[in-house]
Image (cartoon, rainbow, N blue to C red; front, side):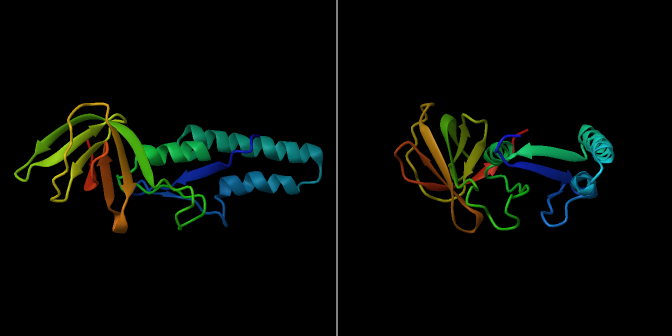
Length: 174
């Protein structure tokens, strides 16, 4: 096994929430770990075979999702700004590895609504709407660098090119 941390995320029924208990692993994982305590090699191997088969079946049915740290961070980048909260390796507190900003490129920018706020589409496919009343100068040329960083109280600040930052909210586009 590589040195990358492996995480098991158990999907709970109801609401599509994701939860991980580091102190009390799910029974399917506990059964696998309990096999280590069996002294007889043949019985231990049989225990592992049975427990791995149960884990494999649960993964195939979507009841258990196995993700390494890289996959978790990739998912956090893709969902940055959506308020989606997945399992965090260190529990409830944000880890030092929590993504604080993302960088992309501008694909399209246009003014929308009565206030003429900016709607921006980025190279990663995300769409962001300006939510403050600032008047940032944005050249609509695609390919400009864009940085979005976390602000206070769950807000997000965007900078396009060398311009000033302004408040934005991620838009769900289907």
